[in-house]
Amino acid sequence: SLLSTTMKSFLEICYCLLLITQALATPVLASSPNYRCDFGNASNFKNVSTVPLSTTTVTCRQNSKEIGASSSNGAAPRDLLYDFNINIFPEKMAVFGRLFDTSVINGKYGILARDKVVVDDVNTVILHTMVLSLILSIVTYNTLLNSGCSQLVKISTTALILTSCVIGPYVYSDVMEFHRPAVRFMMCLPHFVIFFKTLEAFFGFTPAGAKSSFWIFHVYFSNAVELEFDEKTIEPVKSTWSDVFQSARDVIFNIGFNSILTSFMSAHGFKPFGLCHAGKFYDSFRISEYLDPRHLGNCFLIAVVLQQGLAVGDSICSLIIQSVYGMKVQRNMNNPLLESTSPSDFWGRRWNLMVHGVLKRGMYKPIRQYSSSTIASIATFTASGILHEWIVHSALMYHRIGIPDESLYKPDNIALGTPFAFFLWNGIVISIEKKLGRFKFVHYLSLRLPRPVAALLILMSSLPFGVWFADPYYEGRLFWDQEGLLWTIIKIDSN
Image (cartoon, one colour):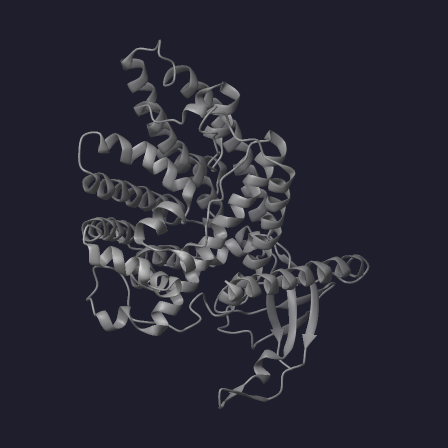
């Protein structure tokens, strides 16, 4: 707990410093030559050149990926907001009796602005999604939640909404000519949520408090958050100023943490511990490769990237709903990677609770009415896996043209089936946990194990196979494209 608090405080300080340097840079850049980062394809930051144009242009080369974008491929250049030098590290530093070359940290760094094209496209998606969710919430409230509608009308409406959720992103990306993976990914998420909230409305498992009025139902149905409802009055719990300030703090922290983490991960090709042989689930399986410390380290950091990426969107939505609508929102992430006590605790009470909620009400409960909890759990994880396969295909594989790094994008490397295998595996793990939980020894052991040891054991039930889930996003270059939504730090030159 002390280590976690210390790290959190340190990262918050780093982000404050980042904001200060950015603010200080603004008036300077307004009266100085425009800095712009253009594309490069070198394998490292080592090759940096200055091109004598009408404006000062820095060509930054990083891990065979483009940092900015030129007009030739439809993406806007990313402005260099500020540059600074670091010369505080000695040539060698002794750590635990071993000498490390720390002089490579010294050099010239820059803070890149967000990619205007990606940001504008994401804002367009959000605006259109708000209109779509309003229309669908009206339809759902007046049909699926209306006891006067016939069963045929309800079935037809449900089928129509579910079909539109599945094919919508394909049609929308073609009509709007959205080909950037980050934009498409953002487009898929609300469709994913609406899909399962429609199912829960059809099967009658929408929270009672959400059905008390259309206004409350619209807020519940249209946002990727879990509202808190009072158990006695079934009304939404009202947010306090403390909740609003906490959400604002979370927004600042999550954006800052994401910027620093993405900067570090991008500089190492999102595999900071190096390439490993553990790959797709249908490849030859060697337990030693999946337990390779380098592989586990890469999987853990990618899990942190995914967790913090979801936390950013969650904190922004929470801030808006709690400050504008006055409704309290449940925190979506509850430190799942470090404090989980069981696989059920990880998936049910800590990781992405909004998705857990809609899956539980839209899939698990309807199936549980007619089967055992084991079958319902595996079916729910299976459904989640299929929907994640759909996200991979629609966001990363379908009609990808005119995108940055197109020469680096290899659609043949993206294997459908790996996210499905990951979720199916975790469904099996949950089922095994329920069976073992009946034994007194297992229950006794779970109570006696130190929290860090228990969390590590729980993490190891999924971490080695995390590559099955993350590999399509890595090969589809989603992580690199999402950099455009953040302010990132790059190394421009070595001293």
